[in-house]
Amino acid sequence: MRNFKHLFIYLAVLLCLSCDKEFNISFSEVHISPKNNSIVEINIPKASGKESVAQLINQTIEQNVISSIQTGSIDNENIQAKSINESVTTFVNEYEALKRDFPESPQIWEAQIDGEVLYQSKSIISIAITSYTNTGGAHGNLKITFLNFNAENGQLIANKTLFSDIDAVKKIAEPYYKKTIEDKSILLNQDQFILPSNMAYTEDGLVFLYNTFEIAAYSEGIIEFKVPYNEIESYLLF
Image 1 (tube, rainbow, N blue to C red):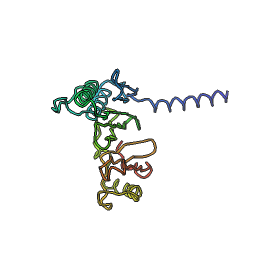
Image 2: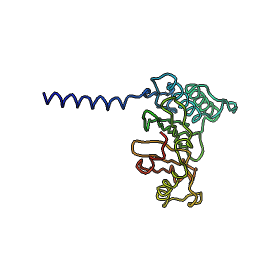
Image 3: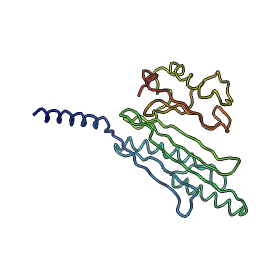
Image 4: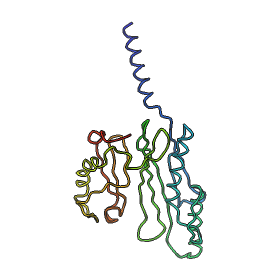
């Protein structure tokens, strides 16, 4: 009888743990690439589950992707595409028009966009969108965008509302920032610490990320550091 009792307790614990992992939103991967053309490849998460929440999350991700590869129409008018597929078609058409006008040009355009769910709980979902585009010039453009969503309603969370005391968070994060940049050529005054526009939850801490040119030269690349939760959790609102 004792063994059955232990088994029941074990199963009850497993059930409780699985309940904690049940969210109103789940994610699958969507792959988008134009037929007969390999210059664009998009792999992003798609939310499903509670319809109103999933719709808002997917719309925000979609707008981010569209903005990442938006170059304007062939006649140089800045027309915003209405869907990812439309923006991909515009991107390919502009490249093909360039090749027709300058057939000897060795330039090859490319766009690679990848999305990843960094963290998910019952209160917050953090997603990273990494985009690389190259339409000529000395180098391509690499950019990472963190999107933090309220898991209950799908609304995008502003950075300032992630914390109960943003000044306290800055004090905690600043030593990690200074250690990260100590061997880098920073464009800004190294004593002038500013929070980046990209902050996100991960499994083991809050990550802070500066994109290329945000605080340093292109050669320094993306600069990021992470603050463990045990140092910052008392100021987190999600």
